Amino acid sequence: MDLDRYDPVPHTKEDTARWMLDLEFKSAYDALEEEYATLTTFLEARKAAGLT
Image (cartoon, rainbow, N blue to C red; front, side, top):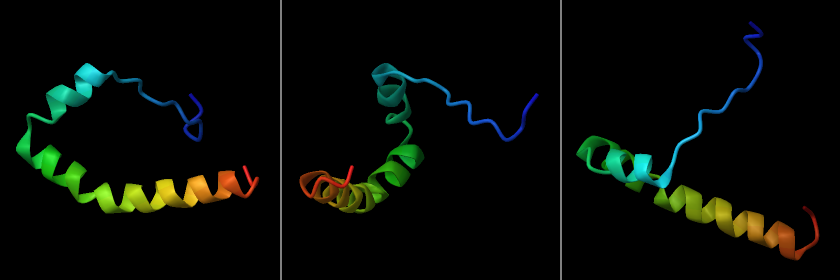
């Protein structure tokens, strides 16, 4: 087995909905909202500038 290989684990919207029922998970997820908003803004600016 190649330990350096990235092997993503797929999940569905139903998985996310189930995880959101866990208050600790939801709190941690919600805490990332500002970080993801900033990242989205950055990526959209790169795309608008033709840098993607």
